[in-house]
Image 1: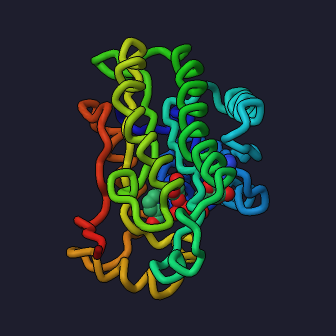
Image 2 (image 1 turned 180 degrees about the vertical axis):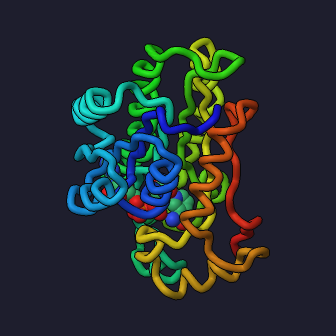
Length: 260
Ligand code: NAD
């Protein structure tokens, strides 16, 4: 699908990090962008900067997603491009800190449930509801394609570290739903893809303890650095523009191999 100026796009988590870079990329390509995010101050600032719309949204709250999608639809029409970046990463800890807690796992049950509610159920909620909107649009590709949904998992989906039980489980769920949701939506000409980022230079990553961060950086074989949010946005664009990409999860991680 060619990315052109007539398209409406939704970016959850677009107030910060990977989502912000994606919102900026889409706006620069001419798309009409709606940012759905919990962070009102930052979300409004980015939306204003790119000439887009902001809707304060909690993706784990179905009514909040309904209201945000209605606002985006009223302003721009149904979105052909949906990028799910909203997410939280609780309890990333060093091995030493984990051992200090004396607990069998790093999370309490409520944290585990909230992480899954935002990262997994929230991603599914936005995808399912946005797909229902997208169904009203006419196809735009020779194959009958209507649009694309991109989700964001993590390499933790298959390689979760100490302290990452909730995060890894939530992201494994996103990877797991990608193929069946793509198959479900194939009758509508809607593609679904997931990106599994490794380590990216964003505010989320800034909260990781310094010793853990140094160890993580050392585990990226090439290029030996953190990823840039613009590199994530570039993959989103490549996915939008390649109609054969559907139903899979792509690692974007510099072949990271975390130390045992
Ligand atoms: P970030 O913290 O910079 O941005 C996440 C955004 O999501 C924030 O603006 C936040 O307000 C929003 N958000 C959080 N909970 C929300 C909710 N309930 N409803 C709506 N919005 C909500 O993080 P980031 O690094 O840009 O991460 C984006 C996505 O990429 C996340 O899903 C994250 O798990 C994933 N990821 C990031 C990295 C990395 O290294 N940065 C690695 C792997 C995966």
